[in-house]
Length: 238
Image (tube, rainbow, N blue to C red; front, side, top):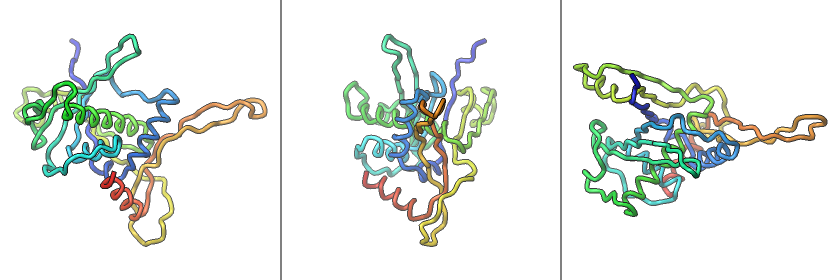
């Protein structure tokens, strides 16, 4: 029997408090250039809090969005890759939740999801940014992936029944920090940030005359409090 369920990815809030989205964009561009910018599956879900989704969209696309008042609201993005004559296409579908529990079509929240509408464009931008970030995180050297599986669709436990909708649920968070950078000397506590991935041109062969491109993985390293505050300010004004 073929299991038609698909994986779900959930990104922890500490990631959004510790990344510079410009570094994520540059990393994804370099991954694409070297041919390794690939989604983990042809079909999967991403669950993300609405306030982080808006930060993501603002930073990736410099598009303003209204203030978020519901910190529990979440958006579910479904990613589907379909092969076509042009090499493939990506469809991203959306669901929303007011309380992080049951998800509904955005139209149920009074949003206009017809083709060309600003609401649909808004969701499309967020979905693309979420997939972009997920692929970069999965390539990050010291990211932690906690994978849960559940095959109890008839369980009395509501959480176990909900988990059984997916083949697996992967929570992504910052792993153990082993690489550090010097503090600026202001005495603030040390916090992590993402050192972006990038392409390095490596010489090889006789007399090092030949050059090949290699990808240096992104990694979370420590930074001083001043650096983190600067990134928060950047996200607010972006």
